[in-house]
Length: 152
Image 1 (cartoon, rainbow, N blue to C red):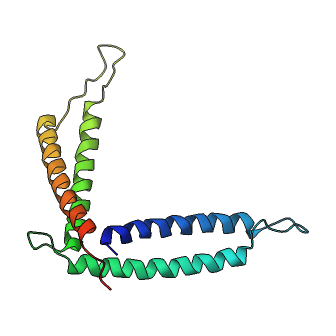
Image 2 (tube, rainbow, N blue to C red):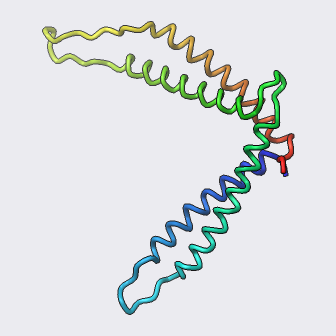
């Protein structure tokens, strides 16, 4: 199984667990004398099995991420952490830029006028650079995901 397939399976397991929990919750309590639409005990057993499958899958994914290396020698696990940090930095700068660019409408000329305290052009250039780094790193990660097998 390729790493990318394992990642897709992990997402499916997580979605299935969420759905099973909702179904258990919906059948957990019924009015006295009524029967639940589905057997909550059977749903709970199924949820526990899916959870065990998910745990084993995540362990294999983690071992794979530690074992695989990108072209520059960085482990896939480290590259994933770096990609997350690039995403968070870019999001922070984007939010700040959007906030600074929002208009402060004044009702009269006597109200206080606001001015931006950061260089928006510089922030935008940094956002662009982070976006490029993110794109390049994400492409490398995706390439590894679709070409490498999952470690046992």
